Image 1 (cartoon, helix red, strand yellow):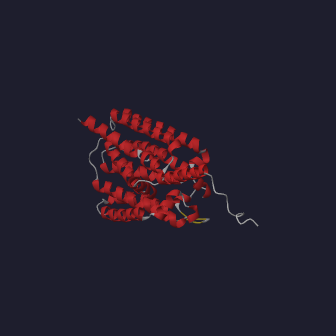
Image 2: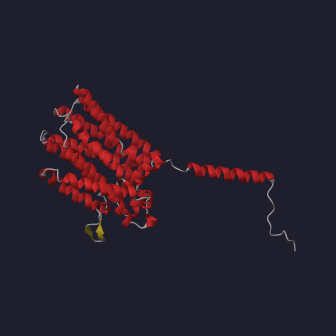
Image 3: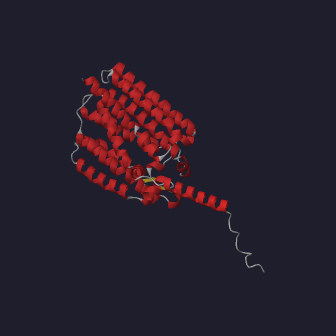
Length: 326
């Protein structure tokens, strides 16, 4: 019996060098996968939904700037910021409780491993919301009650159905329209109603324009969630039309919305022509971001570039309004 029979032959020098090279490359790739602290922080902020409070605040201020009003209701703006900071991360945390770990989305996996940002945002948002709720007028509070009910039922299974208790987002065909309606009313309609300076027709037209914009920039997120939504038997726009057609619809909505703004310019003196052009620029930027979404569908891009279109609209409209004020 050969004593060396079960001993593998010693690799040649060239083979040893190749093994060392492969190991070095593998180590290098592992090192490259490590994210720097700032990128990791912004990624976790995106996964927790905490970042959404800033775009919502920005698009609300953009409403005032669109109509050339500097009469901000600071208590209302603070309430909008903190309530968004409370609700969106809370929705993420509740989703963890209602989903089996094996079915977690990448964002849910991230938050389940590092829940502190989401939890901290919920606590800060709740405290801020409670503080500024008592600063709101009774009129605002009455307008917000039905919207608050919609927001709560969106995250919590409080709606009785034939298949048990459901969340609003779990009811086929309602998710994206519920989001777009609540965001439109809170960021556009209520601020204009409270000002008592604008006709109902102008408020409605601005509301429709805002609704189409929010709907358009929300559709890509349904495209992102197609796999999960199919599992839950939800009838979202991408599932009904297909992802490519859904993104095309998103772009079409972004071209239609500015036409409403121009119509308002010609039929009333609420909006300056320069603001109409600023709206067009912001919508063209959103179209560009949706086109890039096909290539860069990733958490950081979706959070800070796609939903960042709301911040961009705020910036371009605010700059334009300041320039025409001089």
